[in-house]
Length: 495
Image 1: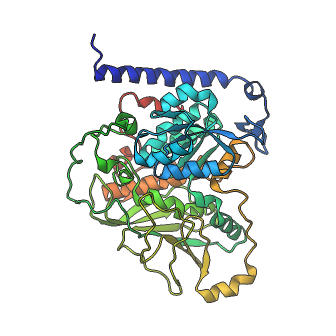
Image 2 (image 1 turned 135 degrees about the horizontal axis):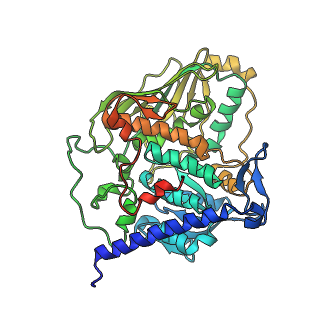
Image 3 (image 1 turned 60 degrees about the vertical axis):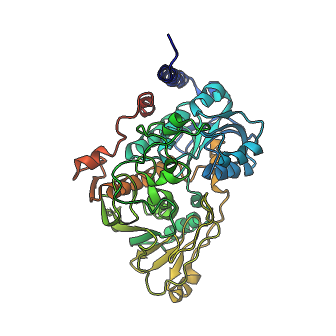
């Protein structure tokens, strides 16, 4: 029988299914063995004696790291992990190894094995890999991460964790089930803003917060398309260097087009999470964690400029409503994106500056905006102004800050940056600060916000049942529509 492309694809899918089943069965068998037999080293447990994860190395060892996604943002992630001195890069993986944006990393690590398909990488090198970095488009985070965790690998995944509410939920459960270290890549969660917010909250400086404005009004490369577009662009020839089927992974079938790759994926609902998923994790993260916000009970789109069901609007204003938590009052977070959709600022706000520590986008420098990325936090007695990533808060107006200066607590310095924190987490020496149990609910907030943008409708959410109660179409979007054949098994790995 002639070997056609369709037969080749069918054979590959069968092999991948066998690999997934074999991997899951193997891990299941290992789960019945005591950790000292598995690793010959002490298991890592919390103060209650509960197993956190199995410690597989001694403190002096480097972590054997595979890197999935090595161009654009992935290049920065690989370099940052390598610069800690705690990672031994053992494998490189990218669906487009021949592209210009992947060349820097391949030249830097010329002798490291290379793969275009992460499944093949795990199949051939699984016993040599202890952890993986995932810096691929938003929609492809989920299958790579789930497979890695099911094989007992620690995972560093770029923000946001995944594209759908269900995928994030499964990733949270997977991290708990497989007892691995996990970190979402919102770097500021290991910098000064994290430690300051924590110290000020514990000291009672930040208290009785009722509202927060979060905004990203800079230039956005994914804007400018015809909002009257009714269908996806006509397919183009697939470049010889790219494995398009693997790039698509769990997404529904699309013909290749240049506007789906090189960062453009972020603007399409099928692939990305827009400005909210891109920047929300750098702006809302500390407030979400230390104010114990959890999931909202309502998300309302009060402004959607240029609505289109295929891609993100030109500008949007979303209101996220969170209920009372213990003795903390209800909170409203209002999100603004779009170059001209700038929120009002309170009297005494001062100058808006870009934090020099914010990494530039892959297509150039971060362009100054009328109001640079950041947040304004309103409490009963005080107002706080903050930027993005690791930028610290200041009390405004300046006169109020001067009056408070003597009462502000000391803020400890970070013992490790975000990349070192992850690798130390792999080694059992630190707890990852943006682990999936912390970053997961935050990412789910973004999935609900994106749903409100996509449908241009209010979302009413039951925090207990984790269901949308006012819109059946929206409720169906909590989960991925039936994944393509050959990719469904990833949704079963957390069971």
